[in-house]
Figure (cartoon, rainbow, N blue to C red):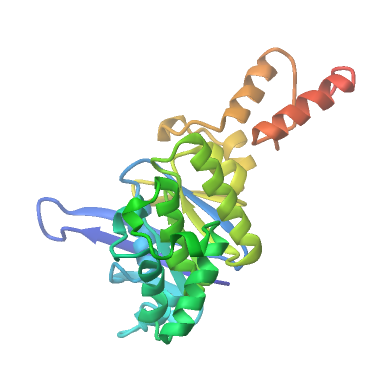
Length: 286
């Protein structure tokens, strides 16, 4: 397995009037090759959990293991951990800092000990993986690029040092519909070619349903559900969490009220269209 978390708890503002338990006895594992969606209301503990995976928050209670790195040890190898876990924060384009795209993407490989020629080769390869034309962008300022291109540069800066796990915090936030589709298709493509294990935080249930194999739901710091998208969106009541099921699921429910029953594995628009065609081509029987 890639990640093993046991009884993880985290409290902010200990022994102050602002004390808050951000994580409360969380346990789960992530296996190699899984695409896991992490959802929950604002303040549910998602960002705190993510930051433990990269050693950005010091472990205080419970255990976190990423491959052979045990964060409960006195001095875990954080450099090695961050080489394994590439983390893309919300609005990553705001974190671009170098004078040129080349320098920005090369920063990670150089930081992890690559020589400059090797780092430049890795940066060029990563840029091409994200759909950027290396020769066109390498000497440009990142600030000159479009929003979507900036985000691709940020992802390339992670891919350049070849992490085993990609952690994405709201990867489509702020993008227009076309930009969101391109970003999600890029992530799906990277899973097949470059980094197979992906953990994604999103408030968009349509994205979670289409691109994730598994969903973990947090509420008030507790792990509420750990299941498949189909089971979560068809079998659980998400109203108390103020989470709306994907559009396709809502339409399936509306059709059921009209006597048209479709399979409860329909999660995307394409699946919905196919299921409706099959229903009516079969004489009205799903």
